[in-house]
Image (cartoon, chains in turn yellow, purple):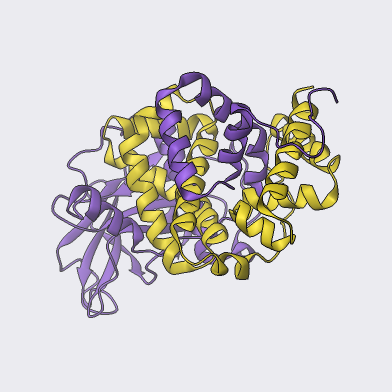
Length: 179
Length: 237
């Protein structure tokens, strides 16, 4: 489905069009379920999360019109944020550490557009300019929902040290991306 | 870089808080505070949006995985308190909608059958026929997509289930002719019907597809005997 197609579906969902909601679900739920599975690490929680996420999408679809973003990014952000909030509400943190294993990363989607490829390449190039361990922390946080606490435990550094070097990495990343 | 402070101090600023929120590393309470701020502080919301754009390419690495078949019903139940289909489909004439429908059904087909069974990608110029089948008061909603090249009609159950003690049978009704059985729906996700050429020829814009409830294995008489639980008109896109 083209981004324009998904945008139109989201707009129609904001007008309470249930047929559009069906199609939006059919075309995007697998991707968002993938987000839930990766971040939450178990199917039961992922299924509950996916329900909450589509309820949210139905209720918040009108917000998409003012969001300056591609439709799939908007949907993935809703899913990621919901899953991360769920993770953070979970206790104890130990569960997070257990699942913080590196998941094999698939090769980039061959169907993505040249523009997206360019942006992706730039992000990866800029991440590669960071120390390897810091780049891995940034990627891990984004893809697995690692918290500062989990990262500090994993790299055996105090929380503030973790925060300092992650923030410095983010500043370098920004200079590289926007420079 | 002059903008990066010495190693032993924590860099500060809204932009970094925005980045941390997008990255997801903040603890629960801080995330709640930031989320509230995004709602009320437009300048801050723009910082968040910008960081989100920076990280968007990583979204490619989330591997799509089909969600369980009954999950959409549960969502509909929560939102609408019912599993009934919408009374009307105002999208009927939207090309985007139909392309979306075809894509959606195709995506389901991919997940339903596995990549090995999918034919080489059909070219976008190849005509496709799609139908959305619904009925008032029925929980069953389906999408059908016909691929001219493979002569496979793929039918996805969007809502509703295959009953245990009955079969859902698919019928093709061309004009005033008697319904022709295409077979029974066997999968709660996607069933592929391999249409013989004479039947495939009848499948065109305006043909009706319908699903009835029949005894297990399908109607013994070769004509529909049970209630129509979903029906729709075939459209070319």
